[in-house]
Amino acid sequence: MSDDDLNDLFNEFLSGNSGPLPEPTPEELRVEAMTATELHMTAFYEACETRTKGWREMLGSWLEELKHYLTVLEDFEEYEQCAKVFACMREIREVSSNMTLNKHLADLNIDIVHEVEPDTDEPDF
Image 1 (cartoon, rainbow, N blue to C red):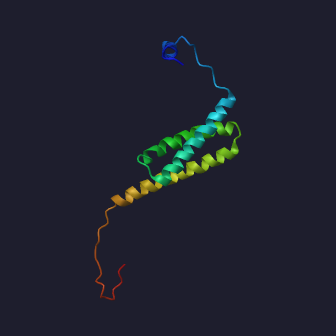
Image 2 (image 1 turned 120 degrees about the horizontal axis):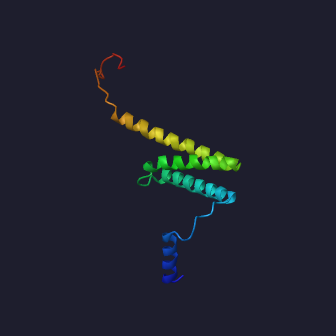
Image 3 (image 1 turned 90 degrees about the vertical axis):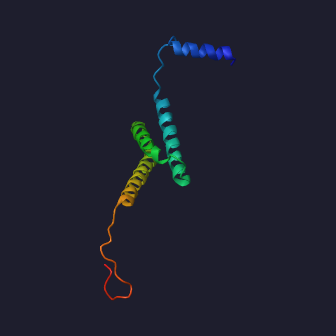
């Protein structure tokens, strides 16, 4: 496509003369759900392995997207993919809960009341 063709395409699209977009077909919805869930799951598992910057902030987004597409997959009876999505959602929740727990444990203030001398026979509990 030449630059003029692209400009015409964008001008037509932005001016609203192209009319409403057609509704997606059921097959397009199914393919979108399958593709999107695979991409989100792959991104989550890869981020867990590599611990790339910002992956923790993505947990909520991944979980939300997988929840949305899980209902679509159930409607199309894609139960194998549903099982994979459900397992990934469980792992996302687990990772998120562990991060919250670790943060609370790190913030926990523990006061030492009495420390036992190592030479005594007194129990240290």
